[in-house]
Length: 211
Image 1 (cartoon, rainbow, N blue to C red):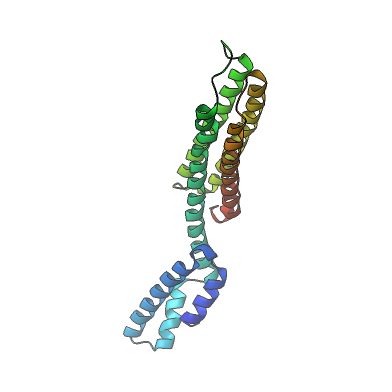
Image 2: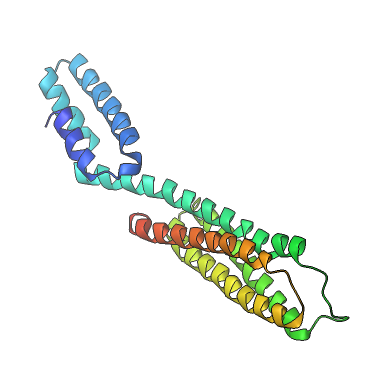
């Protein structure tokens, strides 16, 4: 098989995200190897065949390169999820803290306190899980990243749902402005959607990471 034929077969099997880089690296390696074989006395056609043979079967090489791409993509998804989970602090705390009027009660109702604690617990758990997912991508257990990201999404979703209950309870317990939930909701949903998308992408690439 010629180098061009080999590269064409490899191209059909590589993921689109890093295809151009992998093909360039493979071509450089193959042509350097062919040049060495040719310098050893082989014809160029025979040198190309020898270089292709040494490089390995297309299916095996494509699988290895796809797995390498999956590691980088999964790492990126985990970092994005970590950022989204961390930024959830804005709709969870920063926006309400800066837009809510002073509470009208002398002592905060117990149920509101419980809802706040539960919401923050869900959020902190989600951040910890997202950080764990990033750590997984640097180890031989990278195929577990998807599980951690799914749990991250679940944690953020739990925090969003409890936050919604907290908002409803707050409305009934004290007069609040009508604008802050509208400001916080899109940001909260954006954080949640980002985490879910990252988890879905990691699950999609997971089979390539299983060793």
